[in-house]
Image 1 (tube, rainbow, N blue to C red):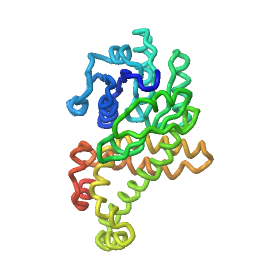
Image 2 (spheres, rainbow, N blue to C red):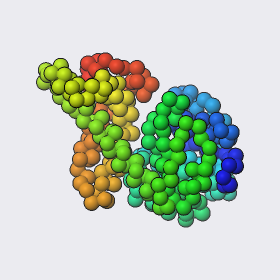
Image 3 (cartoon, rainbow, N blue to C red):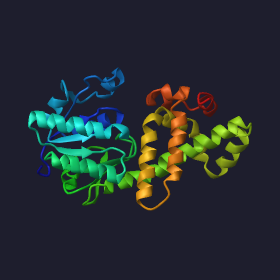
Image 4 (cartoon, rainbow, N blue to C red):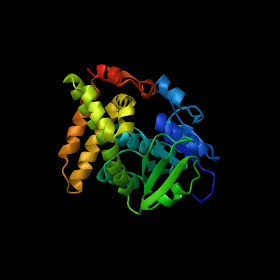
Length: 289
């Protein structure tokens, strides 16, 4: 791909983040395609602004770049499906894996892609879905990372962090350990405080040091709970990453247990959009029982 050239990008799958990424590229004149075959009505709604094709074969055959952005537990199956579609259609797109995976896992995926004759770029997203008032960064690594970074994308900063597949994922594993790990700590602490009858005192104490975090605790915990099912695997990948780095995996094995418990609560049945409307902390905590 030559720098500055208009390309076709295929989004697999067009959820909240994938669709938003697609629209950032489309806003700069790139063609962005996806399929919602077999997907939920929510996903169909989120895919607004993308060119919808009938199936994955059509997406892969049409695309210069295929972007995989899905729950980490599905990443290997998505790659299998994309490689099969490429073989059926004799296509050879560049693959961008933008999932929350441990570096050694994405390296394994890259090796599988290479065996099939396709190049895989390692990517990770920091921040929420790209928006005019947000700050979203796409970290990239691997031999062809510069090609993806050169694609104009509105409201999306692109940063190449190194030449090796796995380096962009390593960034995600480290930053997510702070962002999502602290959310799990807030949930544990405030649920415990409520159960023990000391929530007001705990909030007052924490509010002196973390006023903004206390003010937004209800919404933050609610949104994380709505996404908790996918966060379980992400915490497990963080634990795997930390073990590989020579640090202790036990902390994030515990964080996975927190999100596994949250995923079993009534609040977990909410969509992220519904959860984002919940701001009353006590209401949120009551729905975690």
